Length: 374
Image 1: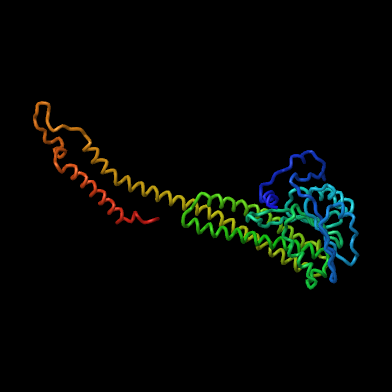
Image 2: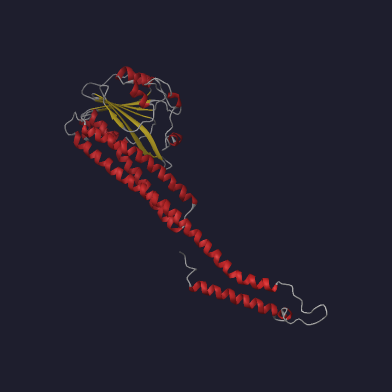
């Protein structure tokens, strides 16, 4: 499961070159696709029958539930090609829609082949607290809902638990409301992901104010990448929710429009959060650069003070390092040629002067406040 999550983390788009020149509706199953498992839920206000998991061949042999039941076919994994044949022959799914199932799509909604087709993106955190991006496809065909996802993990378990509770109103609703409930669960998890990213940014800000590290910069860049990918998902999700609200795709039940309006409000709020976090991440990068520059300035300040102390000391040492003799070749005294070199206290005197100069400079730097952090 861990390897599966790593394969589906937020990543850059990669076009499948095998599609070049292929006819429309050609299906290319990803090489890392998981074996297909099919779950089913048949429910009404009085009963729930939960079936699965089975492979596609066994799922095709299952009898359809009675007309009084709502049927949810929960498909996980795309490895089995028989899945696409089953969807085509038994449910009338168009080849263009089947192609979208097996390829990476942005959130959208369509109703052009006699049924409703939606694509959304599931975002959640794996065991390593990395953001995972999975595709979830919906088909609403009368009283049957089909959902198809790439991996076994998802964010739909709260809806399944509501179905298992006979007191929940969802048991009295039809496939349209179930599709809304699943989409709402997907959108709600966007908030959880953004909340986690917000907490990471808050911790990073505190660390950057104390002592910035190179790994902090890498974390900021990773956050910026995740937030950009989330923004690219939230914007088309808003169009999906707006399309559902303006058109009667899911309005066979009278009051579902109220819930769709609430879903749209949630997505608009997500857009605001995503934009705010993107600005914060940009500010964090500026804060990192500023902190690093200040830290480098402090290093340069220390080096400058050390150099300033040793400049006069080096001058004195250089002067007394000159080789002048006391007497000429004729034995005549030359008193101007550093007589202190021959003084019994010459060395001590020069060292004392050098120490006093260094102490004077340190006191001057302290008085000017150069020892305080910027």
